[in-house]
Image 1 (cartoon, helix red, strand yellow):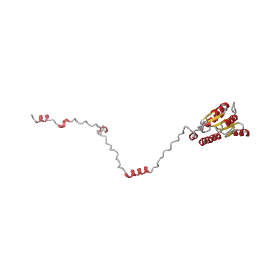
Image 2 (cartoon, one colour):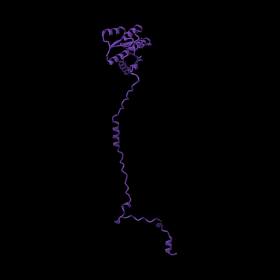
Image 3 (cartoon, rainbow, N blue to C red):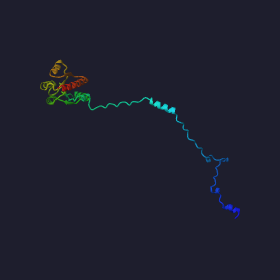
Length: 219
């Protein structure tokens, strides 16, 4: 075997690798930009921690104003101040006038005071004679102009049979002196002539409620 044969039979380590692909060239004979490797973009430099800046930020947060949350809104309770302080018996409203009934009902509801409506003279008289009263005297708003039995007759009957059982306020369309004197002498705590100021009346009711509770405590 000659040397040429030996050379041909001997494998060349370089010949085992595939031949390199030809480099794409542009029309001018230069390598194409697409064939060139993409440049590597280095990551942004990380600046070292500045201890002075961190301390300044911490100091600023310590001296920042503290925000105080607002207090919760008060929740309205199911009863008004009078019902909270006193166990009030219902206010008895004795009148047959629809407009007066609506006005007094609305005003008492605003004060959150319980009340009962008596729409005629016989009904009011029967209720005041039979109603059990123990402790705090109920307040009665008694209209003189009641059908069947007028309010002054009811007042005089209650004053005779159940004195001091109720705190009665007389409401009357008569403003003359004789009617007022008759009401007060029969036992009424007050007399208001129509038309009256409902705010003044409710102020009196609140005052009488406190007086009624005081009388019940002293008894």
